[in-house]
Image 1 (cartoon, rainbow, N blue to C red):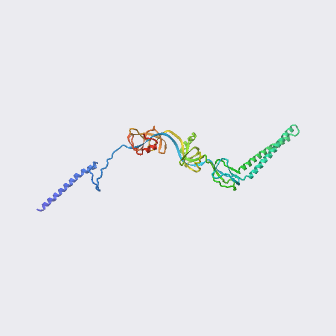
Image 2 (image 1 turned 180 degrees about the vertical axis):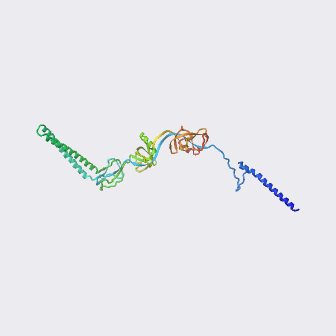
Length: 403
């Protein structure tokens, strides 16, 4: 009889546990369902004891863009290349004869005019030969004069039948022979003068004397290098340009409008195109070009490295936009312009010339506000917001104002 109350107690405990489990399930499932549907639930304490903040809801917004102006201005079409300064004339001074060097008339590094005396060689032998040739010429000239007088008298006597005609003809032959001998004497005299000129070595052109390799009293051998004379003013810059620029170079040269500038440190020198090579280098795909510069102040020096810029032509009143604003698509290029209504509108353009961060385009009138940054995934007519951060930099790059 005592076991019966124990069973009743156990049954009561089991029933109470079942009710507790049913209540937990009934109360917990709605909370999970709310969390799954995105409805915010009560914040629960984290492991650190802090309450986690609810996540911010995502929202769509108006795209933010930065603008730059489409400007009208003159744009020069230029080619840039690295060049080397080369002289128009460099002459190596070498003697024609082996002689004793008697005097050096120049110093190293001296600027000389064309025809200036540089070196003097021992000329005693050449002067003696010249004197002998001059004396021979005078003697033969006198002999010719005597023969001409005799021939004239013989003609008068032959006409009066005092001498035979054959005698007069013989004198005529002697006169003609003497004239030929006189011409030979004149040639010998000129030859002696040439030999004498070899003993006075002169500058073939104006320029600067390089290192002098001999001194007075030295015996110089024929064809031995004595010094060099390099023309400094005017001077040239030699450089190569891609063969794609050949047509513009030729057209500009015909029109006489190809200007060349050489950048040397902080100085820009102006010159003119003087030479285009007759063939393109097939290996490098380039062509050699030279430009001539006035160099009275000797800023340019042979062998010097300079940066050259060639202006082929100038595009007048062209529309210029930042290169970053151009969107390239299979059907062509376009830019997005923004009006007063803050709507982005596509404008088809054609790139005519790109230079640096800018490009010359057709299809715009100039003055439009062009989207430079934030143009990704824009749709025609989309509303935009203008971000003024770094706006001054973009305007400066475009060379204008957004106002």
